Length: 314
Image 1 (cartoon, one colour):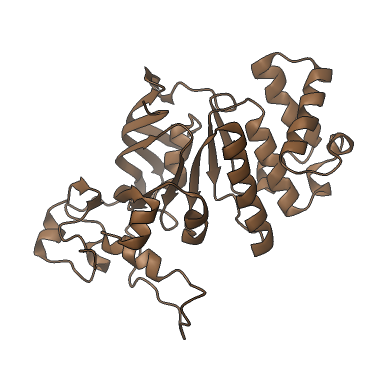
Image 2 (cartoon, rainbow, N blue to C red; image 1 turned 180 degrees about the vertical axis):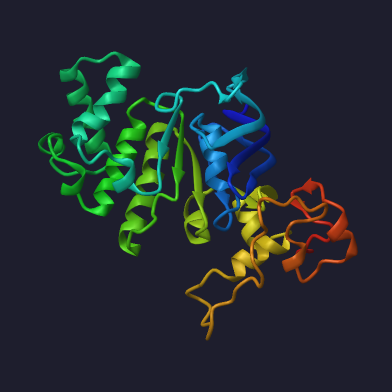
């Protein structure tokens, strides 16, 4: 049984320039203890899908459609899944300096979900908060409870955010670009921390990123989004060894490699689609070197890759 199963998820945003269909009927499932990566360019629908799945979508965004099943239980509601973010799902947002309240101490912010979801006293919440800070590698955790976010480095603020996400003892941790704006060394430390937490706590992790290097280091399974739809989904090793969708192949080719001395970086030609439009065919067709007339008028079905002309493994 899947931990979390999402079917026909669509997310729309009302804007002055028209309706933006950010997510367009995707199916998605996460197994217990699995690290599942959601990959794509900026604007592909990754973060919008994650917020909707966590029950955190707010206006001007709305969940236009979707069926949500948590551990076999239907949690579909009128405005999204009826889950408690902070208890069932822990959320690690992109920018800890924005996600953390600069006017509250770190101890107060982590302790709040402990008191709200577990009914702990302030003293018990403070003790548990110190344990969580120790779990994510904050030195002298008891001494840092009264500190404010600006008193921590960028990497330590990210660890604080992870501790806050773990406070409700969730089974699923959603990490939305968890290494954004961090240097390479700190990125490696945060990814090592996520691996350790997964092993120690048995967490499932939804990793949202455009960085395929991070995906290779952590993910069991990968779902690639393009234009709000699933372009390809596969086990991580299979996807890296033999991508089937031309977009996936392009993302992999555009990722710098230490064992490939390129004179110039390769990029996918063209621009991402306008998410206010809904073309009848494949959204990637205008940028795809393999596209033909069928691709422009007929939307491909998803069978590992949503492509009329999937790439053949070498």
